[in-house]
Length: 397
Image (cartoon, rainbow, N blue to C red; front, side):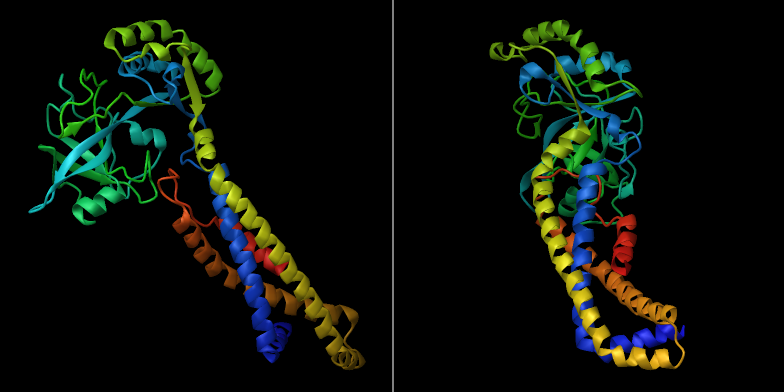
């Protein structure tokens, strides 16, 4: 305790010198922790849930995009036993009219009831869809009955003003009533940051006309996202081989339905891609920038520590007389080294603690600079607890 009190007095002896070094190290370590937290999340933990590494996106190679037609979706639904779980989503445009205002178009998704279970994300308010919950679409693609709806954070704020008592309320869209059962977290931006809602649909939609009217619009062309959860031990390649055996029947059904253009028939088959790898591809640009920032911060931090070491040696030279007097009074070499270690450990602890709010601020700055339309997110970008502890330990070290 006496060593600690003496170390604190030594820091207060030179407040400007101590403050400058503390601030330099706090900025360096804090910024490095924030950048590394963002990189670790994007690379190692882009998706929530223990089985996120088994989540795959299924597409038709002949369509040239990671999507399937309604004919293909019907076949995949019939063979969902290839997966532990299977779901889908398709774009949906609806009209919303505020009291006394003009009607505005908003974008969302119609999804299978297990859609959120596949992603493993919990809602901010309320709940997500239950198994078998949802509406049935008629031949025109319109809902046959009133159904439930889950709002995105954007939809909750823009349509209902962020009302905390929104659960159980009804919202009217395109002349149909929906009961709000949940609100998703702000960070959940799937498929885009402009998604306002998700509507559950039971079964497979069979809509002969993709554009059924201005008020209820499925989109200009089939663009269904099919998601599957692979069975444990089954690789994407093995699943793709099983699905490719179904393709001849699908192509015939697509030709009959007019879903497949002749120029798209050169290569027939499915693509089965890990969603984690898709996230990595989408985030590659940000990771490249973060890597460069991390390198710059590391270089600055190295300079700061070298400066600290130099200043510490200079201070030791100035205190040579103090050490000689203490040695003459009976203090051994071990006792003097312990005192110096205590002083520097205290310095490191204070710098580490100051680095934590710096790391939080830098991470906020990073997330603010990420353009939401460029980056889909299924998990919040936040500080890693283990990295925060490492932040303090590095400073002490």
